[in-house]
Length: 275
Ligand SMILES: Nc1ncnc2c1ncn2[C@@H]1O[C@H](COP(=O)(O)OP(=O)(O)OP(=O)(O)O)[C@@H](O)[C@H]1O
Ligand SMILES: [Mg+2]
Image (cartoon, rainbow, N blue to C red; front, side, top):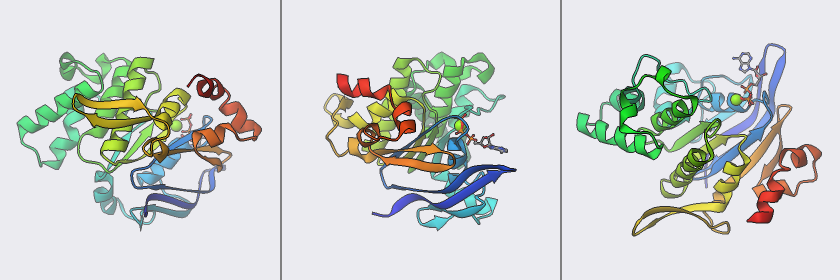
């Protein structure tokens, strides 16, 4: 199966600081790659490189087989249209209401009638557990968690075959966090979206590798089904000192004898025990 996203020997420095050193990984169609790593290890930089917002110093960044590193801004536009990105800092448009933030790309694309845009925006609003009353609010009137949910709804507006999430559940209560994780699982299993998820949330990661989404007569269900191929479509990398320290399934990482990996994942041991 061809890789949808591939980083080949990617290095990136900011001034004297070498952030990525010959990083390699690939994400196949319909797969989810979770990137874990301490603060400042270059996780957000990887997403910005995939989006073409940063250029690598060395190496290739292939999206659907095309190296985007040498592309000019206007050549990146059609590639970015296929990608939904949830930024770490939410990055909402401050002067636009929640409705206009979510509907932004739908309006920009110009393919949908006004009533379709309203319907889609309302559907996305409910998906992220926000209320109709919130549609008229400005970002400054929202809590941090609400901003994040608007950012997720905005990233999901339109048809994307790639989703990039930068700490999508950070700062959310466990119920909303679980709901957002469920959405990522739904997009993976039912829409075959290829994703990269940067997260520090081990519970969310655990849910991603043990749960699957499927359609039932009463609607869509996300249920625990760890042996199912859906759940196996998610694997993880841990970044350290600019390199990918380990890569594999969550269970294989949890068995790693590397002290850093052990420490990083120590809270997971109990999760596996209670499953
Ligand atoms: N545009 C930039 N200019 C200068 N330095 C930068 C820039 N972007 C990132 N850096 C530096 O690169 C390093 C990696 O940053 P990055 O945001 O990718 O880390 P991260 O792994 O996402 O961290 P966190 O978990 O805190 O979000 C940091 O030391 C940061 O200061
Ligand atoms: Mg970051």
